[in-house]
Image (cartoon, rainbow, N blue to C red; front, top):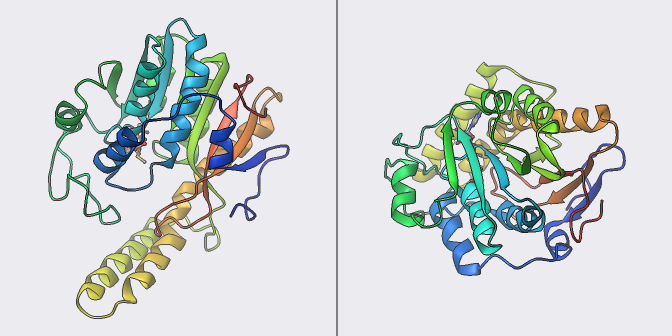
Length: 300
Ligand SMILES: C[S@@+](CC[C@H](N)C(=O)[O-])C[C@H]1O[C@@H](n2cnc3c(N)ncnc32)[C@H](O)[C@@H]1O
């Protein structure tokens, strides 16, 4: 359902399947995709991967030295999807990806909302070890940087970017600066994708860390109680956390809307509603495509 979205003037809204059908390129192999969602997302979501793959296939072959940017590497799902697109399109290029978490840092990536099929349940493991184990071949075109996205973009020297995926801090200030910097760094037909653009049904405009901490604690406490006593308890926890904590993601909407309103009309925007999201995140999230040129099969 996309009816609740309030979008900037002239922005289009479309469902994921319709959007994918309009991009005339090969499909991402189902086996590869399923495994990537399990290993690199803990079974959680990953619909944006298909869109990213197809947009990369549509945009990158026109670039002699294809360059893509991935903000927020996490386990590497989006970076490896873009590398896969390059490989399938036989495009020579590089995926630059940046995260505040270093490549060799051991992390417990599995969090509760992820499926129990996540092979990383209970492990503390670095992204480097994950890639060495599952993606040794698929990661050779990926360059990983440790740091903040804005720092990387402020000193960018790798050439014009064809596709950028912004999925890092989601804060208004970071996304605002990422967009402002990318505006001067993209190729003419460049595409920027942003995840977690949403209306944010927040309680007022609560920005208090203390309230967010309280919401998180209620979520943890009711989760604990539910395992032992009442099945309805997690819903209470989730709802509280959802209403307060998720406002963090309003930053994406605010930064994108301002970018669109302040531009000279050369960027167009499409909001792609994602069919499946975890219950934690609710249903009013979407991925946004900002494009300056014409994408094959695109509507802009
Ligand atoms: C939602 S996850 C990214 C998911 C990934 N793109 C995918 O498709 O699976 C967000 C990641 O952004 C990282 N991050 C947070 N703030 C950042 C920043 N300012 N610059 C770069 N990465 C950041 C976090 O450490 C986290 O790993």
